Picture (cartoon, rainbow, N blue to C red):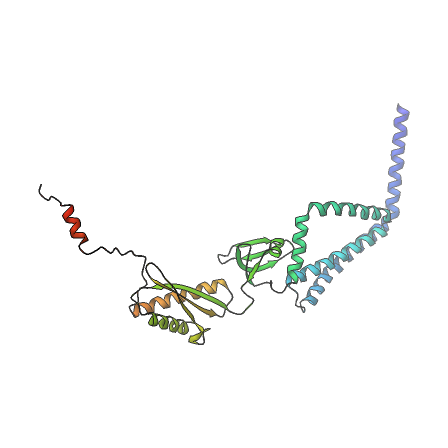
Length: 300
């Protein structure tokens, strides 16, 4: 038993001595590999900055510029790692890594189908012209300003300053409404006036008020005024006009200003905006007949 233990101990020492000799012999390669690794990191970082500076002159979106620069940087690092493995005489290990990477890549691809779909959709969104940073859009029931497009989601900043993150695949597969494709937005405002109102006067007052209130309305005829219906308590109308903004917040502000101005001019001209009322029309003599049929005894 002691002989076996002694033999095993001797073999272990021989193995450790062999490893130590290999480390000493390959120490220059380790140093060279470490230096090469630092050089690769330095080159990758500077190539990233140079690429971004070069792409700033193009019309690509910021997300696509970042993607391209990161991909180039990653490729440089990957090539550097292959070169380092060659310096360390690990070419067989490199072949094993590549073979394993193929199998692993297939497994990861099947497991991450949704993530890969968002990745591909992010690339698509980075190329299209109708979706870009600063646009006010509506998609998947959410509305807001696009503040970021990455490889996972589109970030919208809503009117209430909340952020909404919509997966890229949902944006690509769903209809999207872009309010910023033109330089102007249309404001639509509805209201109602009393049945006794002079409808021509109401129309003229509203159109003049909108024309005088908003600089973007350069002509009175640019204001669209339409009576819509005979409602229960009022005659309803709708007015439409343009403002020089594509922001939903500015549209809301313009609608508020229009309401204040129209209410003021209606008050000045004795035009009523009625609240819902119900008129009861009794036949002549109805109340008297009802009193006779149901006499009330006032005597105690």
